[in-house]
Image (cartoon, rainbow, N blue to C red; front, side):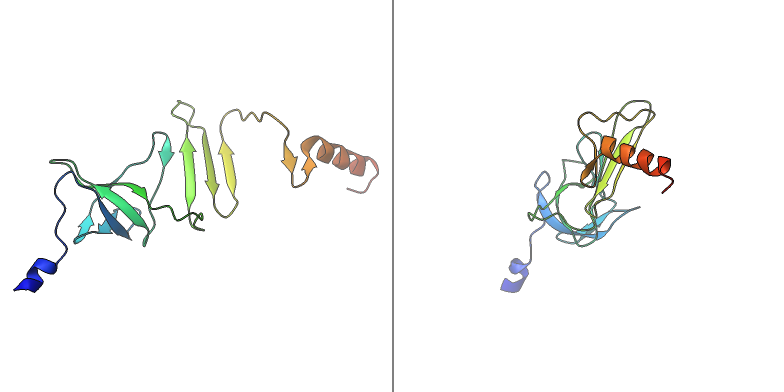
Length: 140
């Protein structure tokens, strides 16, 4: 019957497929020609990325390897739920985490900021002077 030939053909090994994430977190799964579970997720060295349910991803499989998620489709805008995490590969475990909601966390034994630091529209130095003057004036 001609309908049997109209079904989506399975990918050959080594070929990439675009799929949709159906499970995320502890176990990653994506809907490709069928749902594939236990997928490994790859990201550039030093970065941690967890695809979100419903996200379109590229899945590849080497010969004899477990299929793996290697990236997500970029639509131009940053999705609200995305969190990017970069960790240094050093022994001290420093990290930078930034989310699309505007949150940023910098952790490390020593944090160094080079350049002008602003708190809202005010330089850090201006903010410190303003606070000291408020304390000296008895306002704070």
